[in-house]
Amino acid sequence: MAWQQITVITDESTAPQVAELFDDLGAVSVTYMDAEDEPVYEPAIGETKIWSNTQVIALYELDTHLEAVTERVLKAFGSDRLRDWRVEQIEDQAWERAWMEYYHPMRFGDKLWVCPTGQEQHEPGTVCMLLDPGLAFGTGTHPTTALCLEWLAEHDPAGKTVIDYGCGSGILAVAAVLLGAKEAHAVDIDPQALTATLSNAEKNAVQDRIKVYLPEQLPKMQAEIVLANILAKPLCELSERISDLVKPGGALVLSGILAEQTGQVADAYRSSIELNAPAQQEDWIRLDGMKR
Image 1: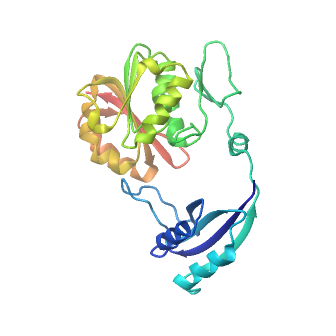
Image 2: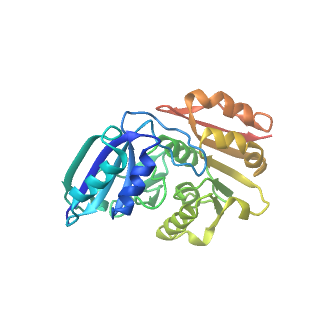
Image 3: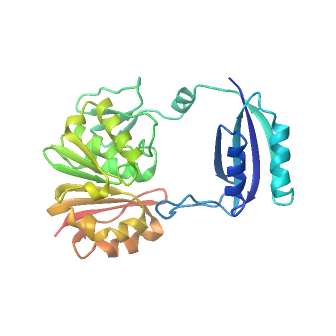
């Protein structure tokens, strides 16, 4: 099935109104994209970031009369507030298979493979985690996740309790259990992340050793390994809470930190964590260390 797509660029104050009108006019989906390569690293929790110049993209069924949609939107906002208007037909495709062209087995350290379904790796002495794109962020392709997976592959979690704080897809919790952790407790503010984590745990047959929680549901506990792959601002704001989750002598792994944010995050944890030298991939940093 083919689709029709309308794309238009507008400013950050107008974009939500344009998107709402597209939706009211029967759009199957409406999405935002950056129109000028303006990076967004850290929106506030619950915030949908709109760029200064935002591309609004509306998808319609093929039999929709887009002339009427165009007329309504132009009448509502005027041509001076909308630019680079484009209408095109989009051919349907199997999105899952298209994604797999870009997502291949990845190896972390000497022990861990992360593989899409159908591309499993079974090398002696390694474990293979099955993970496909889904509801929540985290397939191992982003440096912040890769840095944590490398740490897990290099530090034996066998027999230990792990907390994955900000679990996303649950990739770190699942990897830890596959590498021998006794159990993993996955925490996230987004219920969809918890759903994705449970789904990935079941896919890898480790659901009996992984529990999921919203932050307020996490019982009072400490773990030998705590991983927090979120962002610098919440890492700093939650530093006391996250540090308290680590057993004395246990390991803390922090990721989601841009290189220029390393100092402020390190300062937030120095009082309780003896930090090692940062590890870096591209512009992203991992901090890890032992609780005093």
